[in-house]
Amino acid sequence: MKLYYAPGACSLSPHIVAREGKIAIELSRVTFDGAKRTTAEGEDFFVVNPKGGYVPALRLDSGDVLSEGVAIIHYLVDQSSVTLMPEKGSLVYYRALEWMTYISSEIHKGFSPLFNPTLSDELKGQTKEKIMSRLAYVESELGKHQYLVGDSFTAPDAYLYTILRWTKQFGMSLEEYANITAYMARVESREAVKQALKEEGLETFYV
Ligand SMILES: N[C@@H](CCC(=O)N[C@@H](CS)C(=O)NCC(=O)O)C(=O)O
Image (cartoon, rainbow, N blue to C red; front, side, top):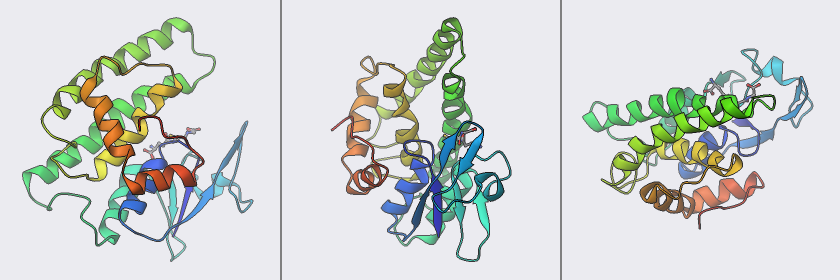
């Protein structure tokens, strides 16, 4: 299997899940150069992922390509013998799905305007304020246990950690959120996470 990624992008979350799950994947870095996107192998990435040329995408051994981070993560979880999601059918399983959806639609996509270099300072400020207000809920939930759905790491933790790393990139302080800050350090100190960061050439920020 080959994961198409860009360093530090949301593709880091399936990368972490693969490393946590001890799943052998190859990595292919996608280079964004203006309107052009090229894989490490020189393919036009818009051909690999015609939905919009965005990462992540996962090429299966069959040659089929899966896109959408949440779907890729679930695919990887189901390939692994390591438990990375609560037991299917349990309430906590649906809590994990609830988190995946919330992170995807409310937090991940909440950051999207900040990647637009032409965004006005006013809109930047409003966007950051909205993200921070969403994080107030995350902060209170993380006061209850070590990870999002209990005291064990599960797939939504890979996703939340990946997205919240962007607060550094955009100069957003997590100082007022002690539980989130401790959580980021907890996730980042995991060997699989450190390995994925290293493979993408990324720094550790929290440990
Ligand atoms: N719906 C996609 C969105 C993925 C996405 O936002 N990818 C970003 C990186 S985090 C990207 O490749 N952006 C480039 C672009 O949209 O042109 C998913 O959830 O996987």
